[in-house]
Length: 288
View 1 (spheres, rainbow, N blue to C red):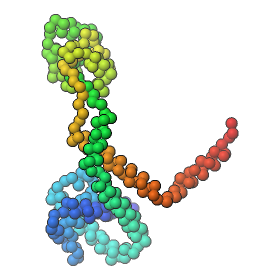
View 2 (cartoon, rainbow, N blue to C red):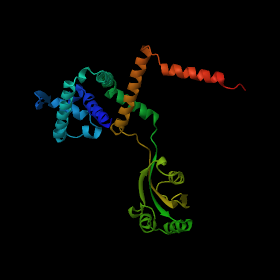
View 3 (tube, one colour):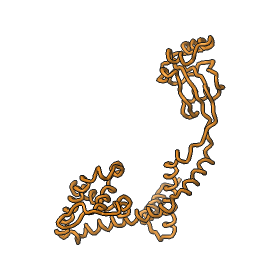
View 4 (cartoon, helix red, strand yellow):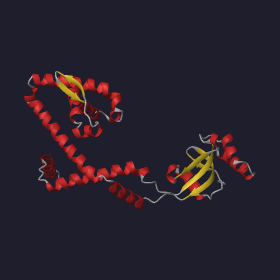
């Protein structure tokens, strides 16, 4: 049973690699890489095998995988020839599985081609404009901090700062936090990047000032120095392109499927049976 499952998965990986996928990567010439009992194995077929592999292998250079892919294709061809010689081409189970695979490939190819038309640069730019309009840029603060174990220690640090001590040097000497060796520098951050008490204190302070009272969080007691404050900036289109492309793709798939469902005559027997069961349960429920 395990062998049957693995073989099916292996065959599926070849079948799902459609000709269109192979043509995108194949060179203008399509050399014969091997023959099996006189049957040619073309480079395009081996490239298609790669496209049926998991994503991490599809991204690798074809030439790196070519020997192993060709060995796999040769083995696959031998198995298919043996199966054909055994009359499996007319086997009812084989026909049913091939028909199921064909339905899936047709559906995926239709969707891929529809998405090629829907997921355009104009659509991505429109989604970016929508993103910018609905996401106000957040202000940011550039701060340093000194993390201490007790309120008394934090007050002592503030006293030293009041006497003119250098904040960064004190952070290097006294801070227990990981940013201590870097002078307590936290760089720029948004309000949501920090725990609430720390963020509230930092964003309420003026640039160039340090906290006059220790700020307590679950990590300990902080003395904060705000170096700079600036208005937030929107990310560029390229910075959010991957995210927006995924959103445009999801929207397009939903629209395509919804349109097909609206035009189709669908009888969902599972839903019908569920509704009947719910109605029967309601009838049998005790009356209050």
